[in-house]
Length: 289
Image 1 (cartoon, rainbow, N blue to C red):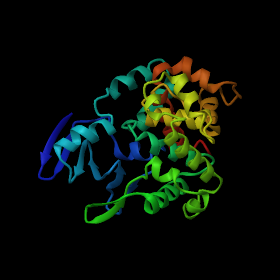
Image 2 (cartoon, rainbow, N blue to C red):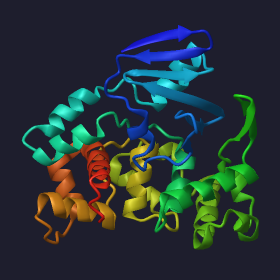
Image 3 (cartoon, one colour):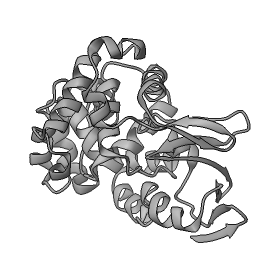
Image 4 (cartoon, one colour):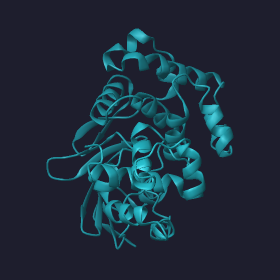
Protein backbone atom coordinates (compact mmCIF):
# COMPACT_ATOMS: atom_id res chain seq x y z
CA UNK A 1 0.00 0.00 0.00
CA UNK A 2 1.31 3.43 -0.96
CA UNK A 3 0.18 6.82 0.35
CA UNK A 4 0.59 9.91 -1.84
CA UNK A 5 -0.25 13.56 -1.34
CA UNK A 6 -1.76 15.11 -4.46
CA UNK A 7 -2.58 18.77 -3.91
CA UNK A 8 -5.19 18.80 -1.15
CA UNK A 9 -6.00 15.10 -1.53
CA UNK A 10 -4.60 11.85 -0.18
CA UNK A 11 -4.34 8.95 -2.63
CA UNK A 12 -4.07 5.36 -1.41
CA UNK A 13 -2.85 2.86 -4.01
CA UNK A 14 -2.09 -0.84 -3.91
CA UNK A 15 -4.52 -1.59 -1.07
CA UNK A 16 -6.28 -4.56 -2.65
CA UNK A 17 -8.21 -5.38 0.54
CA UNK A 18 -10.08 -2.07 0.72
CA UNK A 19 -13.30 -1.52 -1.19
CA UNK A 20 -15.46 1.50 -0.41
CA UNK A 21 -18.72 -0.10 -1.58
CA UNK A 22 -18.16 -3.28 0.42
CA UNK A 23 -17.07 -1.33 3.50
CA UNK A 24 -19.84 1.26 3.52
CA UNK A 25 -22.67 -1.01 2.33
CA UNK A 26 -22.17 -3.99 4.65
CA UNK A 27 -24.44 -2.70 7.43
CA UNK A 28 -21.79 -1.59 9.92
CA UNK A 29 -22.19 2.20 9.54
CA UNK A 30 -25.02 4.64 8.89
CA UNK A 31 -23.48 8.04 8.13
CA UNK A 32 -21.88 7.31 4.76
CA UNK A 33 -23.89 8.01 1.62
CA UNK A 34 -23.19 7.51 -2.06
CA UNK A 35 -23.36 10.71 -4.10
CA UNK A 36 -24.70 11.08 -7.63
CA UNK A 37 -21.17 10.99 -9.06
CA UNK A 38 -20.38 7.69 -7.35
CA UNK A 39 -18.32 9.09 -4.50
CA UNK A 40 -19.02 8.53 -0.81
CA UNK A 41 -19.41 11.24 1.81
CA UNK A 42 -19.64 10.87 5.54
CA UNK A 43 -18.86 12.34 8.94
CA UNK A 44 -16.60 10.90 11.63
CA UNK A 45 -16.07 12.87 14.81
CA UNK A 46 -15.79 16.51 13.80
CA UNK A 47 -14.57 15.77 10.28
CA UNK A 48 -16.47 15.33 7.04
CA UNK A 49 -14.85 13.34 4.26
CA UNK A 50 -15.48 12.59 0.61
CA UNK A 51 -13.85 9.51 -0.91
CA UNK A 52 -13.80 7.85 -4.32
CA UNK A 53 -12.37 4.62 -5.71
CA UNK A 54 -11.09 3.52 -9.09
CA UNK A 55 -9.75 -0.03 -9.12
CA UNK A 56 -7.18 -0.18 -6.28
CA UNK A 57 -6.81 3.62 -6.05
CA UNK A 58 -8.77 5.37 -3.31
CA UNK A 59 -8.81 9.16 -3.07
CA UNK A 60 -9.61 10.97 0.15
CA UNK A 61 -10.53 14.49 -0.93
CA UNK A 62 -9.47 17.69 0.80
CA UNK A 63 -7.63 16.16 3.72
CA UNK A 64 -4.04 16.33 4.95
CA UNK A 65 -1.36 13.76 5.66
CA UNK A 66 -1.70 14.60 9.38
CA UNK A 67 -5.44 13.92 9.27
CA UNK A 68 -4.79 10.70 7.39
CA UNK A 69 -2.24 9.53 9.96
CA UNK A 70 -4.21 10.63 13.03
CA UNK A 71 -7.80 10.00 11.92
CA UNK A 72 -8.45 8.10 8.72
CA UNK A 73 -5.78 5.40 8.87
CA UNK A 74 -7.13 4.20 12.20
CA UNK A 75 -10.77 4.70 11.25
CA UNK A 76 -10.38 2.56 8.12
CA UNK A 77 -8.25 0.00 10.02
CA UNK A 78 -5.52 0.29 7.40
CA UNK A 79 -2.73 -1.17 9.52
CA UNK A 80 -4.45 -4.56 9.78
CA UNK A 81 -3.51 -7.49 7.52
CA UNK A 82 -6.89 -8.37 6.00
CA UNK A 83 -5.33 -10.67 3.42
CA UNK A 84 -3.94 -12.74 6.27
CA UNK A 85 -7.32 -12.78 8.03
CA UNK A 86 -9.04 -13.91 4.84
CA UNK A 87 -6.51 -16.71 4.39
CA UNK A 88 -7.10 -18.01 7.91
CA UNK A 89 -10.90 -17.84 7.63
CA UNK A 90 -10.92 -19.50 4.19
CA UNK A 91 -8.79 -22.47 5.23
CA UNK A 92 -10.90 -25.63 5.31
CA UNK A 93 -14.09 -23.57 5.09
CA UNK A 94 -15.66 -23.42 1.63
CA UNK A 95 -18.48 -21.20 2.84
CA UNK A 96 -16.13 -18.48 4.03
CA UNK A 97 -13.87 -18.97 1.04
CA UNK A 98 -16.80 -17.95 -1.17
CA UNK A 99 -17.92 -15.24 1.25
CA UNK A 100 -14.45 -13.68 1.30
CA UNK A 101 -14.37 -13.59 -2.50
CA UNK A 102 -17.75 -11.82 -2.55
CA UNK A 103 -16.99 -9.32 0.21
CA UNK A 104 -13.27 -8.85 -0.32
CA UNK A 105 -12.46 -5.28 0.55
CA UNK A 106 -14.66 -5.01 3.65
CA UNK A 107 -12.78 -3.29 6.43
CA UNK A 108 -14.28 -3.02 9.90
CA UNK A 109 -14.41 0.67 10.74
CA UNK A 110 -13.19 1.93 14.13
CA UNK A 111 -16.22 4.04 15.02
CA UNK A 112 -16.77 6.50 17.87
CA UNK A 113 -18.11 4.58 20.90
CA UNK A 114 -21.07 6.77 21.93
CA UNK A 115 -22.25 7.17 18.34
CA UNK A 116 -22.00 3.40 17.90
CA UNK A 117 -24.04 2.76 21.05
CA UNK A 118 -26.85 5.07 19.97
CA UNK A 119 -26.76 3.94 16.33
CA UNK A 120 -27.19 0.28 17.18
CA UNK A 121 -29.88 1.00 19.75
CA UNK A 122 -31.71 2.71 16.86
CA UNK A 123 -30.96 -0.27 14.60
CA UNK A 124 -32.96 -2.75 16.68
CA UNK A 125 -35.95 -4.10 14.68
CA UNK A 126 -35.28 -1.53 12.00
CA UNK A 127 -34.05 -1.31 8.41
CA UNK A 128 -30.97 0.51 7.15
CA UNK A 129 -32.70 3.35 5.21
CA UNK A 130 -34.85 4.20 8.24
CA UNK A 131 -31.91 3.92 10.65
CA UNK A 132 -29.98 6.39 8.52
CA UNK A 133 -32.89 8.83 8.41
CA UNK A 134 -33.35 8.76 12.20
CA UNK A 135 -29.64 9.31 12.79
CA UNK A 136 -29.48 12.11 10.22
CA UNK A 137 -32.42 13.88 11.87
CA UNK A 138 -30.71 13.55 15.25
CA UNK A 139 -27.49 15.03 13.92
CA UNK A 140 -29.28 17.86 12.12
CA UNK A 141 -31.26 18.84 15.22
CA UNK A 142 -28.68 18.31 17.96
CA UNK A 143 -25.24 18.02 16.34
CA UNK A 144 -22.65 20.67 15.64
CA UNK A 145 -22.61 22.30 12.20
CA UNK A 146 -19.35 21.98 10.23
CA UNK A 147 -18.39 23.31 6.79
CA UNK A 148 -16.67 21.12 4.20
CA UNK A 149 -16.72 20.72 0.41
CA UNK A 150 -18.79 23.86 0.03
CA UNK A 151 -21.71 22.63 2.12
CA UNK A 152 -22.83 22.10 5.69
CA UNK A 153 -22.57 18.79 7.56
CA UNK A 154 -23.59 17.92 11.12
CA UNK A 155 -21.63 16.00 13.72
CA UNK A 156 -23.14 13.30 15.92
CA UNK A 157 -24.30 14.90 19.22
CA UNK A 158 -22.38 13.94 22.35
CA UNK A 159 -23.80 12.16 25.39
CA UNK A 160 -24.14 15.35 27.43
CA UNK A 161 -26.27 16.99 24.74
CA UNK A 162 -28.60 13.99 24.43
CA UNK A 163 -28.84 13.40 28.20
CA UNK A 164 -30.28 16.89 28.67
CA UNK A 165 -33.18 16.19 26.28
CA UNK A 166 -36.65 14.80 26.93
CA UNK A 167 -38.67 12.24 24.98
CA UNK A 168 -40.68 15.17 23.61
CA UNK A 169 -37.44 16.76 22.34
CA UNK A 170 -36.64 13.53 20.50
CA UNK A 171 -40.04 13.17 18.85
CA UNK A 172 -38.94 14.92 15.60
CA UNK A 173 -36.27 12.25 14.91
CA UNK A 174 -39.10 9.65 14.73
CA UNK A 175 -37.26 6.92 16.63
CA UNK A 176 -40.48 5.63 18.19
CA UNK A 177 -40.09 3.46 21.28
CA UNK A 178 -36.29 3.70 20.96
CA UNK A 179 -36.22 7.31 22.21
CA UNK A 180 -36.39 6.15 25.84
CA UNK A 181 -33.45 3.82 25.24
CA UNK A 182 -31.47 6.65 23.62
CA UNK A 183 -32.04 8.85 26.67
CA UNK A 184 -31.26 6.02 29.08
CA UNK A 185 -27.93 5.38 27.34
CA UNK A 186 -26.89 9.03 27.35
CA UNK A 187 -27.94 9.58 30.98
CA UNK A 188 -26.19 6.46 32.28
CA UNK A 189 -23.01 7.36 30.40
CA UNK A 190 -23.05 10.94 31.70
CA UNK A 191 -23.69 9.81 35.28
CA UNK A 192 -20.88 7.27 35.12
CA UNK A 193 -23.22 4.34 35.74
CA UNK A 194 -21.98 3.04 32.39
CA UNK A 195 -18.31 3.97 31.92
CA UNK A 196 -17.45 3.82 28.23
CA UNK A 197 -13.80 4.66 28.92
CA UNK A 198 -13.62 1.62 31.18
CA UNK A 199 -15.41 -0.55 28.61
CA UNK A 200 -12.53 0.10 26.22
CA UNK A 201 -10.15 -1.64 28.65
CA UNK A 202 -12.44 -4.52 29.69
CA UNK A 203 -12.37 -8.10 28.47
CA UNK A 204 -15.17 -9.11 26.09
CA UNK A 205 -17.60 -10.63 28.61
CA UNK A 206 -17.20 -7.80 31.13
CA UNK A 207 -17.64 -5.18 28.42
CA UNK A 208 -20.79 -6.88 27.16
CA UNK A 209 -22.26 -6.99 30.68
CA UNK A 210 -21.48 -3.30 31.17
CA UNK A 211 -23.25 -2.34 27.94
CA UNK A 212 -26.29 -4.42 28.84
CA UNK A 213 -26.93 -2.08 31.77
CA UNK A 214 -28.43 0.21 29.12
CA UNK A 215 -32.11 -0.36 28.36
CA UNK A 216 -32.64 -1.81 24.91
CA UNK A 217 -29.16 -3.34 24.73
CA UNK A 218 -29.27 -7.12 24.53
CA UNK A 219 -26.64 -9.55 23.29
CA UNK A 220 -27.01 -8.71 19.61
CA UNK A 221 -26.83 -4.92 20.01
CA UNK A 222 -24.01 -5.24 22.57
CA UNK A 223 -22.00 -7.37 20.15
CA UNK A 224 -22.48 -4.84 17.35
CA UNK A 225 -21.31 -2.05 19.66
CA UNK A 226 -18.29 -4.06 20.84
CA UNK A 227 -17.29 -5.01 17.29
CA UNK A 228 -17.69 -1.61 15.64
CA UNK A 229 -17.09 0.78 18.52
CA UNK A 230 -14.69 -0.91 20.91
CA UNK A 231 -12.45 -3.11 18.76
CA UNK A 232 -13.61 -6.50 20.03
CA UNK A 233 -13.08 -8.31 16.74
CA UNK A 234 -14.19 -11.60 18.27
CA UNK A 235 -17.74 -10.27 18.76
CA UNK A 236 -20.26 -12.09 16.55
CA UNK A 237 -23.64 -10.29 16.48
CA UNK A 238 -26.52 -12.75 16.08
CA UNK A 239 -30.01 -11.74 14.98
CA UNK A 240 -32.71 -13.63 13.06
CA UNK A 241 -30.93 -12.85 9.79
CA UNK A 242 -27.44 -14.05 10.80
CA UNK A 243 -28.99 -17.13 12.45
CA UNK A 244 -30.66 -17.97 9.14
CA UNK A 245 -27.36 -17.47 7.32
CA UNK A 246 -25.39 -19.78 9.62
CA UNK A 247 -28.09 -22.46 9.66
CA UNK A 248 -28.40 -22.33 5.86
CA UNK A 249 -24.70 -22.50 5.04
CA UNK A 250 -23.38 -24.67 7.88
CA UNK A 251 -26.32 -26.87 8.97
CA UNK A 252 -28.32 -27.47 5.77
CA UNK A 253 -31.11 -25.24 7.04
CA UNK A 254 -31.66 -27.13 10.28
CA UNK A 255 -32.37 -25.13 13.42
CA UNK A 256 -29.39 -24.63 15.71
CA UNK A 257 -29.20 -23.72 19.38
CA UNK A 258 -26.49 -21.27 20.41
CA UNK A 259 -25.15 -19.65 17.24
CA UNK A 260 -22.82 -17.45 19.28
CA UNK A 261 -21.17 -20.49 20.83
CA UNK A 262 -20.81 -22.07 17.38
CA UNK A 263 -19.15 -18.89 16.09
CA UNK A 264 -16.82 -18.75 19.10
CA UNK A 265 -15.60 -22.29 18.47
CA UNK A 266 -15.51 -21.99 14.67
CA UNK A 267 -14.06 -18.51 14.18
CA UNK A 268 -12.47 -17.62 17.53
CA UNK A 269 -10.89 -14.17 17.71
CA UNK A 270 -11.83 -13.53 14.07
CA UNK A 271 -15.58 -13.88 14.65
CA UNK A 272 -16.40 -10.28 13.76
CA UNK A 273 -14.66 -10.53 10.40
CA UNK A 274 -16.40 -13.83 9.64
CA UNK A 275 -19.78 -12.31 10.51
CA UNK A 276 -19.27 -9.39 8.14
CA UNK A 277 -18.20 -11.58 5.23
CA UNK A 278 -21.12 -14.00 5.80
CA UNK A 279 -23.67 -11.19 6.11
CA UNK A 280 -22.49 -9.48 2.92
CA UNK A 281 -22.29 -12.79 1.01
CA UNK A 282 -25.80 -13.86 1.96
CA UNK A 283 -27.27 -10.47 1.14
CA UNK A 284 -25.56 -10.29 -2.25
CA UNK A 285 -26.81 -13.80 -3.05
CA UNK A 286 -30.32 -12.86 -1.89
CA UNK A 287 -30.59 -15.56 0.74
CA UNK A 288 -33.51 -13.61 2.24
CA UNK A 289 -35.53 -14.46 -0.90
